[in-house]
Image 1: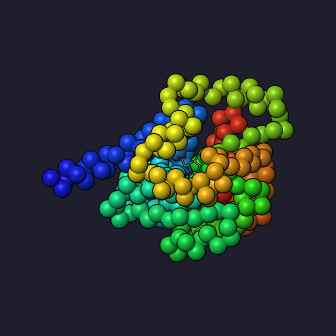
Image 2: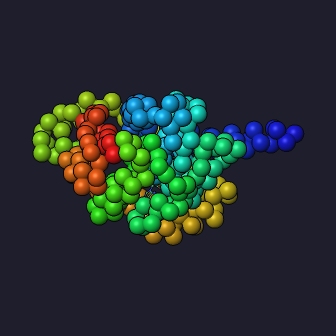
Length: 254
Ligand SMILES: C[S@@+](CC[C@H](N)C(=O)[O-])C[C@H]1O[C@@H](n2cnc3c(N)ncnc32)[C@H](O)[C@@H]1O
């Protein structure tokens, strides 16, 4: 009886994670490919098969799930500001000793203090750091360098356009697979959250954090800006290692 209840509870939360994934894939049809690139990069610096990974701005823990799928012995810290998305992650990873969740605001200087102490082998992030203003993102690059072991890796998949070649950017963007906008979109997904009693209090907390906005800043400089910022943060190497149109994965070695 108790097992049935636990199974139902787990499937409730995994259902929310899956619907988040579908919603995001509607905007980013190659999202899984980006996640595969991140996981492959973690493999490059994995300490044996048990890397210590930080999933930064983790949402509901989608990347954490992919990392654990590929490295079952990994230990992952998944950190985000959003109490709704973290609640979903908590339900998905309940009882999984490999995963630690942390509530952090990357706009604040002391966010690493809320995490289990480093060093980490890899810090990964996707579709998230464009929510930060330029100075906050530079500071995050510095803090991430401080969390990594020497030789550790940072990888960020996001909108990192070329900008200096606008016509080529347009051509490259046309090569991106078409998005499936038939499914539930961002607004509809959040409306469904608002209709779900389990989220009522958390949504109030979320709205306070983001000042009522569903999606705050949108800072998407050219890829070169990221390379420069990572160099200034003390990374020994930084490069774009994957690109499709304006979407790219930037990787950096400490
Ligand atoms: C589009 S979601 C991507 C989530 C996840 N990486 C994924 O791919 O599914 C952007 C994430 O950035 C998080 N985020 C935005 N601003 C943040 C901040 N200041 N501190 C921590 N997380 C933040 C949001 O809460 C959200 O989970």
